[in-house]
Length: 180
Image (tube, rainbow, N blue to C red; front, side, top):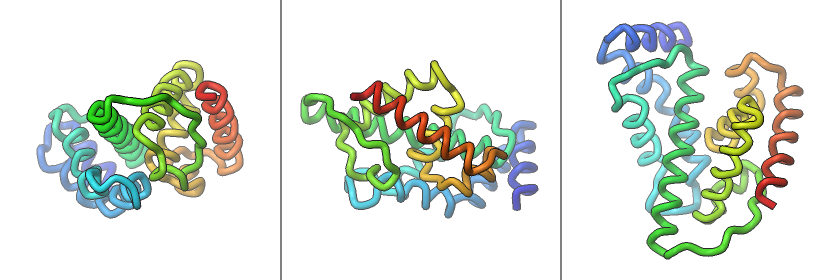
């Protein structure tokens, strides 16, 4: 299946308008699982299906395709999901006219419990982390917003679970320091 995905992404880069939708369809179940980990039990106005469909529009709607592999596809999808969740949080805050920012505990299990102001604060800290350590910011994006576990991350990044866990702990500490 990876070969098909990679080939479809290459075909999309070469101008085939049906190739990226085929790849997206093949990966839909995995993307929905990731989306569900970000919105389960939480906000009824942003469902996993809506998040996946919005991700599709962000990835496929521009007409310019630069995705090279399954790993690159999931990295782009995780980033798109992050932007969508953050934009959604900003809209919700604007409707409520904001509030004070508070400490955010970084654990993938707590994702659905974050208030909109916490999502925005996390996004701002992640931007700062990305300037200092792009690899760690990408890891947080894939793990937290993409919902990937360490075995999946190891397959996608080609790194060992042990080194990913070490970087995850370091990134969490850095984000806590930035937020706290």
